Length: 231
Image 1 (spheres, one colour):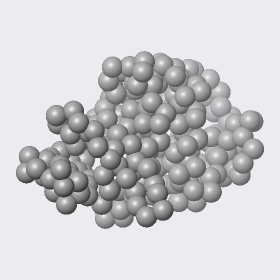
Image 2: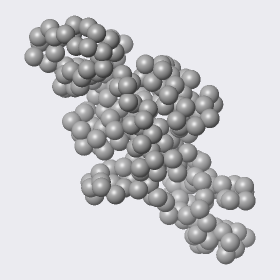
Image 3: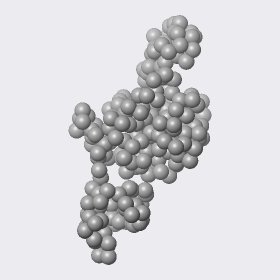
Image 4: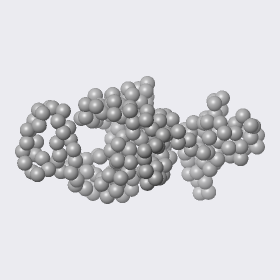
């Protein structure tokens, strides 16, 4: 929400004070962080970000103070990353809180890896190995975390040790995620979809997730925490 003191004198009308606005861009200067906002009447302004009270009508009921602090600290960066790469903010946030267990997973804490991105053969950065759950996309034989060959059926969960990408910062993880989406899952971008639900469906159809309940789980999370307020 905007406050009267955040607007220029010309725009300090009562009708603008406490108005809900959409933040479309953030920009840092030496002395401040600025936000581009769109008012209900369609007018666009740049204001000092301090003049915005972030509406977390994202419902954080049931989350801890640690989880809330982590999420609120990353939201501005997440919004910028999503908007700059034509990704639905709600989709990015839902994947981020899910894959990282609200920033408290082993991968998030020890490798700054928020999206569970594995270290494939083309990765040239650091690697972090961790036990992880996979869901079989078909009936097959796999080597589990005990280094034993096991038979798994399509849709069944199993555990393996896998190599994951390790980042210097969680911001690096956000940027790498955005690059991965743009390069490999372009059909899910905002320019190619009409809603976050369609974007999630296209992600699954393109092989992003093996969990058959991926779309419904992500949609439920977005709706529960009202993450779509940032879209």
